Length: 435
Image: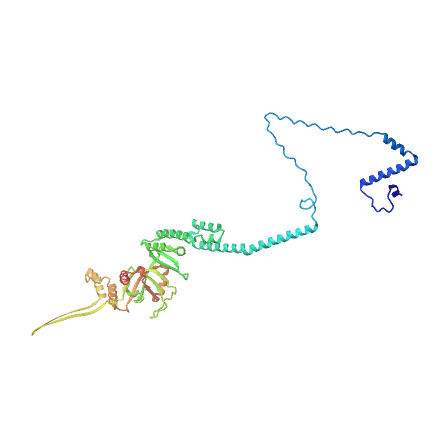
């Protein structure tokens, strides 16, 4: 019935519009149709239409145009002001990424997958760079720095641990950014300069009343050695050595004792040493002809021991010599001849006793027998003939800490003469040999 009133067919498949405006319009149409149907029955519908036709339509008044507002007059002397631009209302649009439209789900999945793949790729590239390039490079740089710092700590040690040059080198190593920069840092040069200054100061401070110092050092086996040298020789050693040697060297005041030892002529450098000579003391394994030195590194047990006195056994002081000279001259039947003989039978030790007892003139005996033992050894050297079984008593000046060693090994030591501190006769022979 309602469909007939609305003028729709029964089989009309259109669904009703449930929106508010359409509902109101439909209601108004239904009301109008009902009013028309009632009017036809009562006859009032045409009259109402005629009255509506007679009523004139209302005229709409035109809207007046607004007058422009006058601008306010600026005050004299006032500065012009600029108005800030008006803010536009935020354009709130729905959708992703601010594009004003919603991205489809398939595209969203594609973008998310691409973003995840990009992140994974960046992580893989970063990890590969770190483990293949950056980490090995940093390891090389760190190893170079550790090696340099170890050298600095080796050279700048002891009294130079707080030296300004060492602190400056450590700062340079820490600030280096490449292995080449670390390798370019010089450690040995500044360390050598610093140690030379320090050791020269020690020489001037530690020298004794005789102008000597004792140098204590470690040999290649780690054994501690002592050497007594003159101040000039010590300064020469310091000038020639670098930090690797100077840092292991200690200069002190000599603390020495005089030790008497009795040794054979072989052990006493062939008996060709004299008072004042400097000798090195080596330890032997035995006293046979096949004697070998026990120190395999060639370093003496005592360096720079000074010979204070040397005595040759009195057996060499017994003299028994005869000298004869005969001459015969023949002229015609005349023959003349002459002969002369000299003999010497002395005991030098007895002569010394007589001079000491004032039985003989001491000045005369002293002039005759002064350096008799050395003269005898020197004559034997030049004549290439000598008493090889002679024994010698030597008084050696050695550091106090080496005294026990020398006393306990008196029979197993051998004295040598360093050519750098050779006696005069040796210097003369070397010059004649080598020009």
